[in-house]
Amino acid sequence: MKYAWIFMFRAVWPVTLICEVLDVSISGYLEHQRRRAQALSGLPSGRQSNEALLTHIRAIHAEFRGEYGWPRVWKELLARGIRVGKDRVQRLMHAHGIKARGKRKFVVTTDSKHSLPVAENLLARDFTPSAPDRVWSSDITYIATDEGWLYMACVIDLFSRQVAGWSMQLHMQTSLVTDALRMAWFRRHPAPGLIFHSDRGSQYCSHSFQAALSSYGMRSSMSRKGNCWDNAPTESLWGSLKVGRLYGKRFATQRQAMDEVIDWLTFYNHRRLHSTLGYVSPMRFEEAWHAGQPKQAA
Image (cartoon, rainbow, N blue to C red; front, side, top):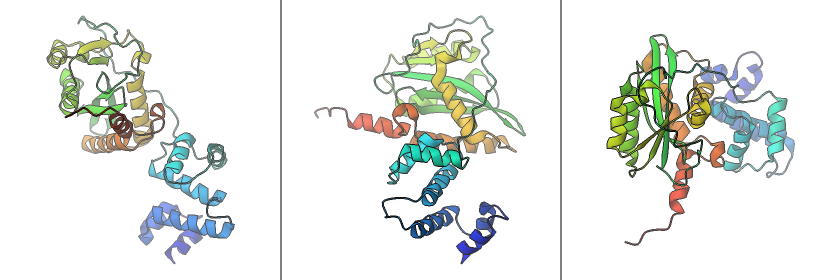
């Protein structure tokens, strides 16, 4: 009966509001609509009607908060056992105005106007190492809150694009990037010789940060001056975070922003389908790689 009320008043009030008032989950309502559309279509169970398929698409799009465009929605449909052609998904989403949030430009936070030593660019835009923990990259971004700016540094393993370490603080001092490095090292314990790539920011060039890299047996690598493409994977990560999760949101406190970012990082590492990895999550990609390695004799 509650589903009937939602269907009756959905043209007057938002479905999310009606579901909240009636204490009905949105996913339950969408599944009810899918089954209803399938029953009315008269199509075989293996063939989804456009209305039923659209219900699945809307559910996935809402679940991932508008971050997925048609390629990821299509892959997610296949992962859920819904066999459908990618062209059909693309057409339906285009026809109903369902699309990923648009790209935006963000301000550069790099402070490279300093006299500190700068490392050679060892990476040379080779973003595809052959194994985990061979190359890490790092960068800094910022998030606006009503209490002021919140700054974030992250460390990415370029093999799986997994975020191995991060730090969020109220400033952009060297401890911001050092804490992210320490978190990544304690989680991964890479062998000596790892290349750690960053921009030429004063935080990464500082004596204390370079000393931390040396103590972990890592080699410092830095992008060319003013060239964001030399650190493209981390730039892409920031775009995914800000466009996919933070855009349009207002945070009353820095704590709220931290909680939202940590929630997104968990989603990113464990669930987000990554186009560079063949549309699997970073964790799944790395797990598959380890499973395929020859087992060492005891």
